[in-house]
Image 1: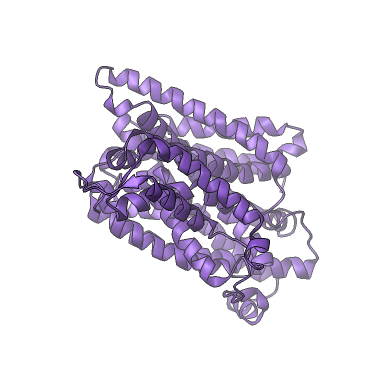
Image 2: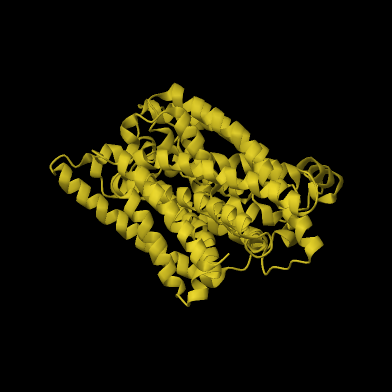
Length: 490
């Protein structure tokens, strides 16, 4: 594929995206931006959330990761499923009962001012790092296969991508994203299915013939039973469960889409439908990864990192049609994670730190202008973070993403668990210190775990340890007293 063809496809897709944006953003206001006027059809939200949950990280990292981890990631996916049930049965009723726009206002009602700001602050840190990492993965592919050929600097590539994201989310917000995510999920899934079929044909086999070959090989190993191993299956399962609870249930971006549904019943239908489909889709990504691995072994394809395997084969070995399919899938996977993150961060900062919902004395136009400024400022932070990640790219991005989540979402897990499952009153002013000490402690535990715990090596379950340390710290600086509010009883 030539750089010109790649760029033309990118532009054509972007034009289509802006057409949807123009339709959905008409007559949008601040409530449209924040919660879609609570009028989003649940089935549209469910379908679109597939693309938002997977993102460019899954599209590239998971298939490439098969060479190192086989199918052990599937145990994490089973954990995801149970995590989504917890969200639907425990967290969604709480959010709808309290009629929240930002889910972190629950922490203010349950604990107080400092706990509220701590929770919102950790979400902003988590989402900025995670979204920047996802965007970097896609932008870096465009740089290697398009912009390097024209000697365009990386920062210009990043700037173009960021400007596009700002342009189509600035006005419509979540009301626009619900519909653009549906479009992008369709293209992403179509790209995966076509890629699997295309590689099967190139290897001179049918799809089912390739599946049998995968099943008979060591690549299909799902369960690792050595408890010392960082991918021990029980660790993987519970890590997946709590990753979902935190990165979806305690994440403003993902919950903002659920809260845009008409009512709790429809939000639950969305969650159950979406979680079931997601299991199958993740398995399909692993099958694709196995096919890519077999192709690389047969054709002696070498890559610098596992994340490069899919784009290298698609662009350089399978011909223009496969390259086009890959590019459309990658772009479709990239935009949902970027637009949702930017919208949710704007919502959280505007409501949780600027108190935009509570400002009765200022006009709607003034509130909109403040929101625009916040939106652009967060996009600028993305720009800076992506440039930094460019210097640090040396391992699978999905591994980095879950590592970051372990440190940054752990305090949120501890805060919400304490609020939901105890009646104790915390010392609100101490909460920020506990939330910082817990991930720092986890870092050192991870660094020296093999020496301290007889060869045990922490994996993604570090998130759970982090949450437990936060919970213990809150308990230590709390007292028993019956709550006057019922906010923590759900």
